[in-house]
Amino acid sequence: MEYFKPKPDYVILVDDCIATNFLHQLTIMSSGHHSEILAFETVHEGMEFLESKFSQQKDSSILLFLDINMPGLNGWDFLAECKNDGFDPENLVIIILTAAAMNKDDENLLLENPFVKGILPKPLDVDMIENIWANNFSGSFQAQIK
Image (cartoon, rainbow, N blue to C red):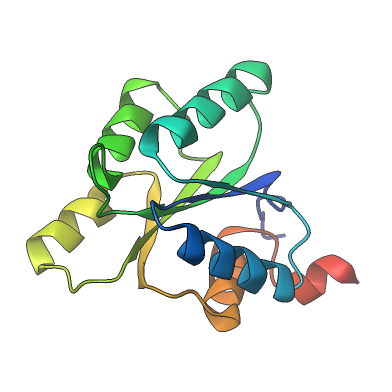
């Protein structure tokens, strides 16, 4: 029998653009996903949430969409903090979102990070979310409903 992680307890968006966060929340909801969805506009806010959740519930499962290019602290800083704080890559799935083309060296460096499970262009669509779900959690959204 194949083991799949359960659906995430939370879906987190960390992106400095309010409109992008709103669009992605709508897309995730329209995909049939039923976890709690939270959006943060700064790395600091997103990291505070993770630290709080993982200190309260070590086994929380989180799917996090991370904008790599943000002013001030950026996605690279966020990933460094995840390692420094000792989060478990089994409980934290990070998908990098970018609006700009990324050079191959940066892409490879990101994919070497144990938390990063993919890099996608903005904006998210339902098919992207379905693929993320199928590859990282208990099959498809539709399988969760049955």
